[in-house]
Length: 354
Image (cartoon, rainbow, N blue to C red; front, side):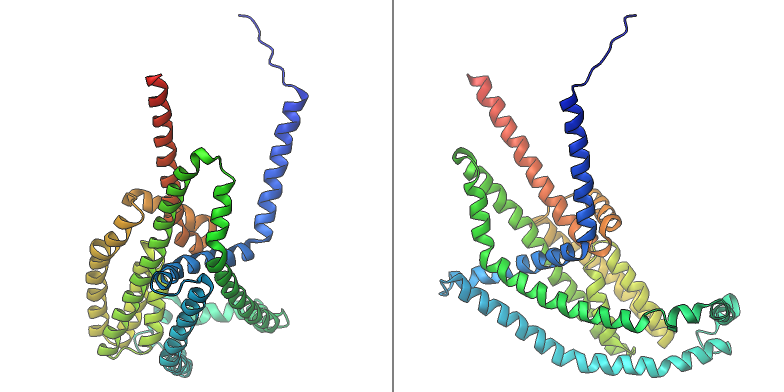
């Protein structure tokens, strides 16, 4: 057999090295700016959720996009303020009640009483806590390790993030169509209409999914709160808010919320725990077979297997936000792939007729 000698040009090697270095620098920049990128992702989701309202106002008499954006944002803030005025006092009261009841729970665990006594009987949790304290756990948690500074920094960061996300959302609503139009102007004139259609499909996919998912989560939170209030379960509003937040996570979020809330229900009473389990089973069937198909069939037309794989990959890459963004990203990729295949078929068909 003849030996074949493969030679690479110096320019090829340098090009490969340059690409590898560029990819490494890009990944490093993404890692360093991951918090800012998270804020941008949240702002994009909010802008997509609010944009249909802006367009509705433009179609119904408010011609200027700036005025329509201002009305939409003010109405959204007013709605959040009204929601806060309705729920925050109750939420604060329930959190204070939980804090006041916590010593009693600890005493029950220590003396193996009540429904939480099994934690000490089976798992000896008190002794484990003592061991952690003796080995420096208290110092790590409560000592001079910057806990207070970390909490203060977290609060300041949350305030800055909220204000920044709000302004980014407003700017995206104001200037989003202009940015998209500038992008299309960079494309060849012969393919602009094709990519406009693709962009419209992507917008419908992502925007419809975001809006529908928020609506489903609100329904889940309100319905679970009503059931818990009817059963007399403590911290119903706080738990209902938790259900709404967790329900945003596709597939796994509703199940996790059901486990947490049902556990609290069993602590309150066995009947409440059983009723909550039955409620969540019935509700999840309605959500999975009625609400979600209505959203996904009109927006993200993905198979359940692809949805599951997308959510798992997104959660592994970026946690909760990755799981939230996984389905619209997968839907966007699907739209681009279908458009590329259609464009390729059209070119092959034109070549065959020549």
